[in-house]
Image (cartoon, rainbow, N blue to C red):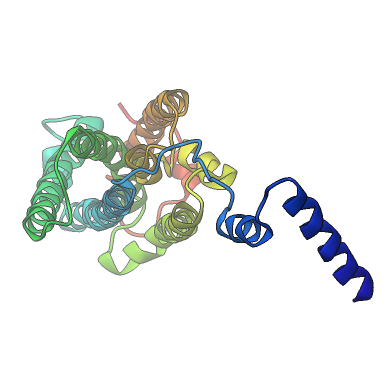
Length: 273
C-alpha cells in the first residue's frame, strides 16, 4: 500500500509538472472504452428470414408426410378393390404412378400455397413481415424444392404401398420411411435454429432426402452459398430420377399382386410386359 501511494504521488507530481490535471485524466480514462466495429453490418431482417425458413421447412415436412401417405393408401385401396387391374388395361404402370404423384402433388401444392399465403397475409397485416425481393425469392425457393421433394417422397410411398394389399398392412411398410424422415427433420430443425452455418446442417441440407426440407430454409437465411445450392439441386435431381426408376420398377412388379405382402426381392424381379 505504501509503495502504491508513493507511486500515485509521483505520477500526480509528474503530470502536474507537465500541465496535466491528474483527476481529469483519470475521469477521461474511466469514460473511454474500446470501439467495436462489426465486420458485417447487422441484418435487420434476420429474424424475419429465420421465421420464413423455419415455416417453409415445417410446411414442406407436413405436406410430404400427409400427401405421401395418401399416395400409398390410394395404391393399396386400388389393389384391394381390383380397380387397378381395369386401369392398367389402358395405361402402363409407370404412367399410373406418375399420375398419382402429379395429382396429389398438385393438391399438396395448393394447400401449401393457401396455408403459406394466409400466414404471410396475417404476418403482413400484423406488421411483423415486410415484403421485398427476399420474401419473393424465399416463396419461389420453397415451391421449387417442394415439387422436387414431393416427387421424391411420393414415389417412395407409392412403391412401398404397392407391396401390400390391405390397409391394415400399410403402416408396416410406411413406418421405416416416416421414422427416417421424422428423425432427419427433428435433427435438422434443431441444427438449423442453433447454427445455420454449421457443418452438420450444411451436410444434411446437401443430402437429397433432406435437401427439400432444409436448403430452402438456409437460402432464406442467406447462409447457403450459390455453389452449395447448385450442388444440392443437382444431387436431388439425380437422386429423384433414380428413385423414380426404382420406384416405378417396384410398383410395376407389385401393384397386380394381391394377398400376402410382396417381398423386395419379388418386387425387384423382372417387369412383366
